[in-house]
Image (cartoon, rainbow, N blue to C red; front, side, top):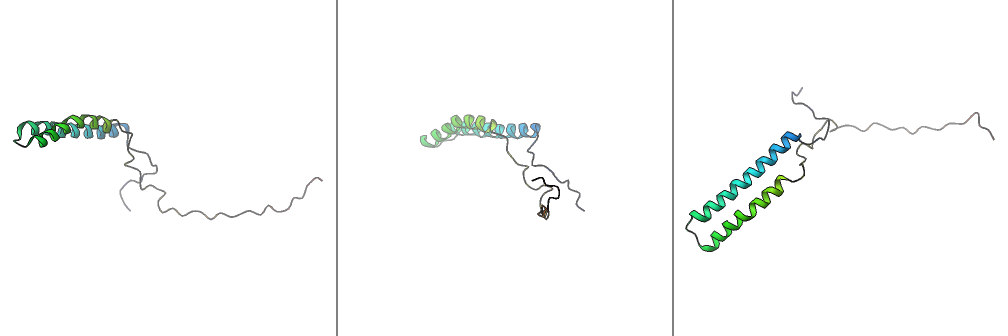
Length: 103
C-alpha cells in the first residue's frame, strides 16, 4: 500500500498557504523591479535599453499588486478518492401492478 494520503475533496489551498504563495509572487515581482531599476542606472547601455528597464520598473509594481490580489488558484485540484471509481449498475424497477386501486 502507498503511504501517501488520499485527498477526498477538491478543496484548494488553505488561507495560510494561499497568502504565502501571494506574498512570494509579490516579493519576486518587486525583486525583478528593483533589478530593472538598478540595471537602468548602472549599465552603460543605449538610451532605448535604459527606457525599457525603467518602463519595467514602473509597470512591475502594478503587475505585482494584481498578481497578489488575484483570485485563489486551484493548485490542489486533481486526483482524489473518486479517480478510477466505477459507476454502479442502475436497475430500472418495474412499477408492477396496483392491487388496491379505486376507480
